[in-house]
Image 1 (spheres, rainbow, N blue to C red):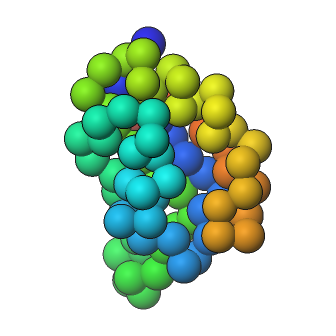
Image 2: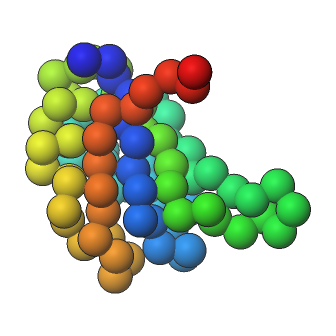
Length: 83
C-alpha cells in the first residue's frame, strides 16, 4: 500500500487544514489537499492525504472510512495514480 489516501464526500466547508487535523491522530501527515474547482475556487468535494509511512495510512483508511466530518460521511480509500 502507498502512503496516499483519497477522501471523498467532503463538505464544501472542509479545507486543507481541517482535513489535516482530522487525519493527524494516525501519524505524521506530510500533506493534505482539498481539490478546488479551477473556475470557481470552490471545493470539488474530495481531497488527498499523505502520510510519512504506510502503516499510518492503513490505520487512517480503516478508521476514517464512514466517519462523519463537517456533517458529511467520508469515504476513504487508497489513492490511485491517474492513468
